[in-house]
Image (cartoon, rainbow, N blue to C red):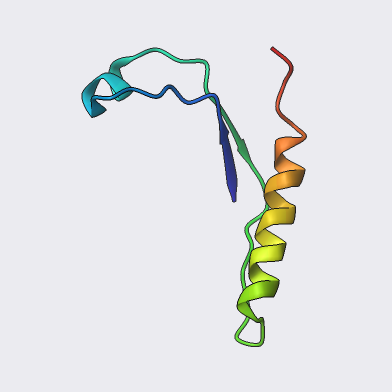
Length: 60
């Protein structure tokens, strides 16, 4: 699982990749759903994991 923050937004895809940025990528533990998991439970786990990762964004 990863969380991206601060990516530049451009109208042209080429400029999106060529524009320097101060993007932050934070990696967390992978989430592996089981066959017994309901879709709502998987979404809740993903949401909770993303929220936990977002707390590690450094202050700018």
